[in-house]
Length: 162
Image (cartoon, rainbow, N blue to C red; front, side):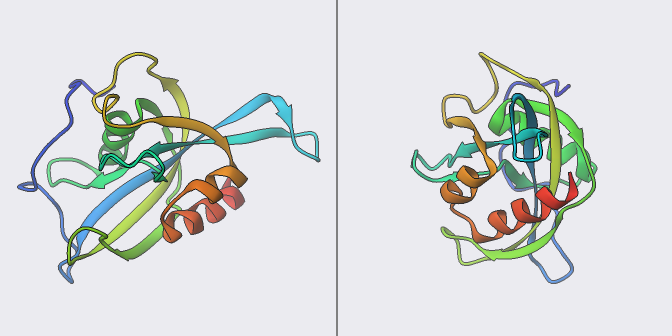
């Protein structure tokens, strides 16, 4: 469990790739909807999307953020999921790595994404609950609403993994 209920701030501890790109880690939180089944009579998968912290409630994505020097990659993924979405879970095998350009800075980031099978969802309090909205949606709806091409690609890859 993450001990602090405040989001980390600042860039002093950020990790960077050998080529100078800021390293970003994230996850696609998912759960099985046991009340809903797909065509093969298996439980449907739902994923958790969140809004941007920049205030645009129409821009959805998956939890992600900087990987810092004082934590392992899985600790960073868990921290970001708790800070941004108020969830914890089991982090599974790496989905992949993407390079993308920041929409707000003249920089390219290197993102590493993981699937996270959610085991706990905080209902009333998590660090960024007043800055973001969250929603459990189907895979198809997540693809429609997610703003980042590379996150959509990560979602496609994750579906094949779970």
